[in-house]
Image (cartoon, rainbow, N blue to C red; front, side):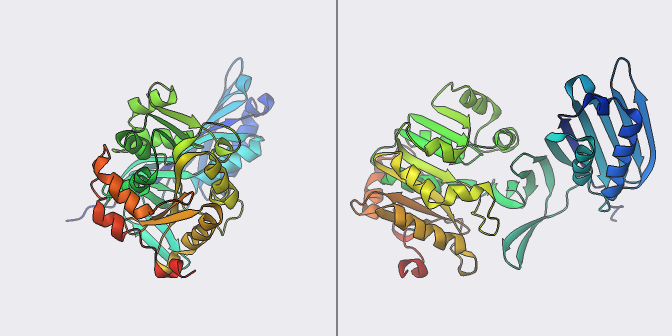
Length: 399
């Protein structure tokens, strides 16, 4: 016999900053601002109580039909800590927080959303008119960073990382993906002593680089919160101890929370392998910061930071005919920038990668010859993989 459905809600915890101290000491104004923000976000406000403290500070609590909300202020710091918990679909707690920040004249310094009691399915956009639905068995972590929305949850593929509702990696398939991304590039490069990783917040590529013989890895990622969430909640890649050491530059991996575009521009160390592992390009979102790291100029900057015989590899999209626009665009740009371009299709069929280097010997034969001497033994890349998965789709070969 099936019991009643479990309660399902979203709990937003937010830190608001840069607020006028007088606003944060105005109990009546805070009551009104909170009630108005909640109502505009779809919640039903039943009661609001406020308590002012000496010498300063106010606590406001709202009882909602959907659950509750509260505000706690520190006027001396210009900050307010807010939580909004709503059940059901009528109210949007994230919108309530945003509206409250605007009403108080402040900014959202940090916001985290936790699923309570259950999580609705993730609807992943695949292509225009197509959506894939992921049933979420066990929510682990949910957070809105300054750059993206993160969900780490149990799915049929194990613990899975979603960014902005797009699956980035999953426990059961991530090694197949990351080996296809990194191992061919490591085999093709003349050396692999120094590696640069841009993106790839899970940390798996950094670990593969060390296993393949790298002596130093610079890992550059713009989103510190995403990297730390992955280390805390994913069963692969960095763990918290390894990430702490990498952040402290204590060991061969150095994590830098910086803009990859700026990192490769201009002078700096030369790298044997540069890995660009990011979510797909967003041509329908011209202002999306990801697009900068897919452009021709960025690839040229990466090329110019290579050591002699070095290789750039980038996640390049999906080879399926009905969703290969980013792959075709990347293929054209790589050929504008590099003398030799190599295609690698992952056994995790959703993904393909492009390798760029100066013109040289036969790339596939070079990789096959280097494979037996690689210190790391790949589980999904072997000689037959290198022969078969390096053949581009015909529509790329005939361009």
